[in-house]
Every structure is written in C-alpha cells, then in structure tokens.
Length: 131
Image (cartoon, helix red, strand yellow):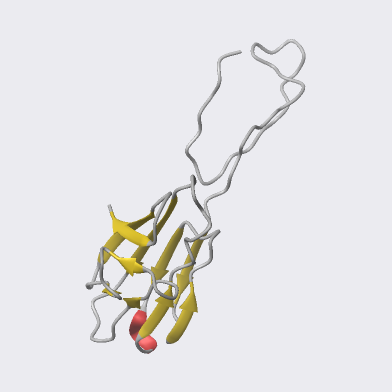
C-alpha cells in the first residue's frame, strides 16, 4: 500500500483483469488537485483568480494589466502563482496586487519579454514575494 505520486497532465486508468498482477478494483484520491493553466491574449485588465496556478500572457494585441488576488485573510496558507510573458513585444504586462498590497515592496511588477515569475503570497502579511 505504498503511495504513488504522479506529476502529469494526462492520466488514464484501465481496470486490469482479475488475474493480472497489480490489478485493482477501486481508486481513492486524497487531496487531489488539478493545476489551473490559462493563456491570456486580450489587451487590458485581467483578474488573476485564487484558483489560477499558471497564467501565460501574450500582449501582442495591446498592454495587459492583470491584478493579483487578495491575499489577506489567508493566514496560515501560502499562495503561489506562476506568471509569464510568452513573447518579445513592445506592449507590456504590468502586474498589480489587490488594493494596498505590494510585490517585493513595489506597487507593480512589469514582466520582461520571454520571462516567467513565480509569485509567492505569504501566509502572513500583504507583500507578494518573487521566487
């Protein structure tokens, strides 16, 4: 009964015959969670959801101004989101935290071309950190 850890985007289970080695008749998942990936191509504002794990921005159509979710009231829980600018383009992707919060002490974060940032919301406080 050793646990199995899987890191995959696709998983298929087939029930093995009764005589097959390692066959199973049931599957139990505990704390299973799907990674939420989104790609944003529209110009303008975007609200990063508390359920988003990875958001890829393509500002080809215009500047993008996503807002991070509010991290207050999440004491004891850490929040992480991966944000990226997928292309080299003159248009910008400027991340803004929810009202009064900061990113490494700053009011905004401009993501450079072809870059990825992992932002870590603290378990206490209102300052997002860059990992």
